[in-house]
Structure formats: C-alpha cells, structure tokens
Length: 158
Figure 1 (tube, rainbow, N blue to C red):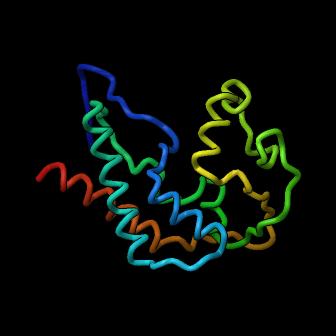
Figure 2 (cartoon, rainbow, N blue to C red):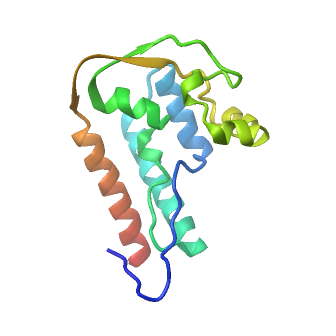
C-alpha cells in the first residue's frame, strides 16, 4: 500500500474513456451479439495495461483499471455480478438514460456528456429493480480485474 507522511497521494475516481477496440467488444456484448471471448479478454487486459501506464506517466500515486472491468457501466455491474436484480425499461431523461443515472455532473457539464456518451455508445441503459435475494456472484470477474491490474503493474515494474 502506498503511504506518505510528506504529501497527499493522488488518484482519480470514476470511469476513464475506453479505447475504441474495447468499446466495440462492449457494444457487441450490449447488443447480445457473438464475439470471440479470448479476443475480448486480451483486449481488456491490454486496455487496462494502457490506462494504468497512462496514470503512472501522469504521476498518479494510486492507479486503477479505469473501471474497464465493469464493462459498460457501474450500473450494469450490479446486473452482471449480483443476483436479485432485473433489468426493466425506464423512462429516459434528457440524455437517453434513466433519470436516476443522470447526476449533477451530467447537469453541470452537458456539453462534455453529449460528446462522451456518443463516443462510448451506451446511452440505451435501462433501469433495474430488486426482485429477489441479493448475492454477489462476480468472483471470477473480480479475479480477472485483479489479475489484469496486477499484470499492468508488473509490466510497468519490469
């Protein structure tokens, strides 16, 4: 664990912009189309390595995977890694997204999000509801996320 007695360590919070080749795999996944799983995993691993290296080059002290392992969004993360939730249609807000997912940042920086949402291509997100007992089932995806970030860190160290 990084620690400092001399200064505040720096990092960032939230998703970073995904590279085009990763977005293409995620678009196929989102649309329920088939894709080569091994190629997707290789692309994800490479993308995490690149985003980790950019954070290191920028001078951040604490790096992360840019939330690339959460695939489409943090809200889809719930549907992909937990039981007890069901995707349901939701009335869209101004951004083509469920109103609950449009936070203050969307309202304060609409120009940025118009461009960002268009490049990421996942503005068709639906709402979801709790429909049963909640249990975490994403252990294998979590292991993959940890291994991808460890690999990125060891690539940089080596």
